[in-house]
Amino acid sequence: MRFSDRLLTIAVTATLTSAAWIVVGSMYVDLDGPGGTEAPVDEAELAATEAPPAPRASPTGSPDARPPLQQAAPVRPGRSEVNQLVVPVLGISADQLTDTFVDGRDEGERLHEAIDIMAPAGTTVQAAAPGTVERLFTSNAGGKTIYVRSNDRQTIHYYAHLQDYAPGLKEGQVVRRGQRLGTVGATGNADPEAPHLHFAILRTTPNAEWWEPATALNPYRLLGGRTDPPRATP
Image (cartoon, rainbow, N blue to C red):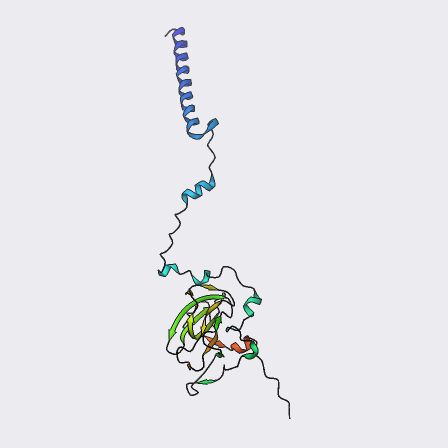
């Protein structure tokens, strides 16, 4: 091959190679963004596209519609809020209470382990402390009852012999201290001539069910009931 022919072949090859690189380069720019560099990724947009779809709300009235109890209280109460109770019958003060905690029941076969707060039928029953309504229950002994579990889940307040529940009250509902729960009555085995609220405070554990055995605390003392002065030594 002559020298001039070899030069021509080299020139043609170089031209074709350059053209090929120009085509490839233009494709790289179109795909990856201006300037031939990879386009930045929007992390928020990427997360949104990869995140699983939010679960649909359960139909009203289904078991899943009831919120988990451990999430019922949005704010953890302070120590003073936990320790301060109000008398659960509206209009009744602590010095009007009677300590019936150790009174006998069923002909002395068991202790009362609660106090009876006497009041006219229909008087408002209010939450003694904040918590969550764990159970609305009707029994032969207690009549219409309410079990309210404290926000730390270690205490249950038991309200019995109610005439009625407050309108709209439901299980799983978060209630504040002083919120209306129902009315004083004489349902269950209470004497119709002596309507009252049977109020008990039960120390339990966070995972225990509302119906499981628990340690009864004396509400009279926790509500600030009047204590008898010490007797004079003879």
